[in-house]
Image 1 (cartoon, one colour):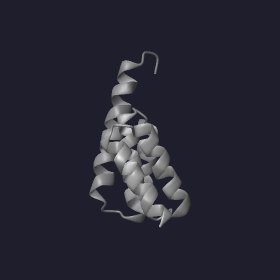
Image 2 (image 1 turned 90 degrees about the horizontal axis):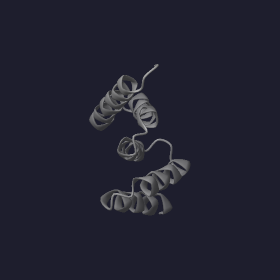
Image 3 (image 1 turned 45 degrees about the horizontal axis):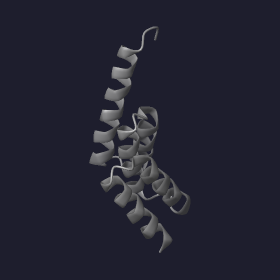
Image 4 (image 1 turned 30 degrees about the horizontal axis):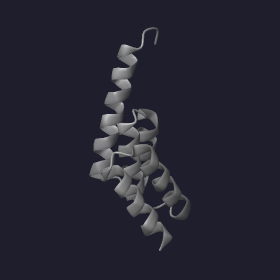
Amino acid sequence: EKFKRLKNEGNDFVKMGEYEEAANKYSECMKLNTEECTVYTNRALCYLKLYKFEEAKRDCDHVLQIEDSNIKAFYRRALAYKGLQVRKKNTPGI
C-alpha cells in the first residue's frame, strides 16, 4: 500500500536525520489518510528538529482532537510550546 511505503520512507529519513525529506513524506501520507495520528506525531517530531515550533504544535493539536490522550502528541506539543517560549524570549521587540 502506498501509504505504508511513504510512511516507511519517512521513518527511514528520520533515522538518517533528514527531517525535511521525512516531513515531506509524512505530508504525502496525510493526503492519503488524514485520520492516521502517527504520521502527524512523526511530522511534529521533524518540525521540532527543524525549529518549526508553530507547525509542530499544529500537528499535535490535530492529533489531540482525534485522540485526546495521545502521549506523544502531548509531549511533542509541550516541546513546541517550550521552543516558542525560548524563541520569544530571545527575540527582542516581541
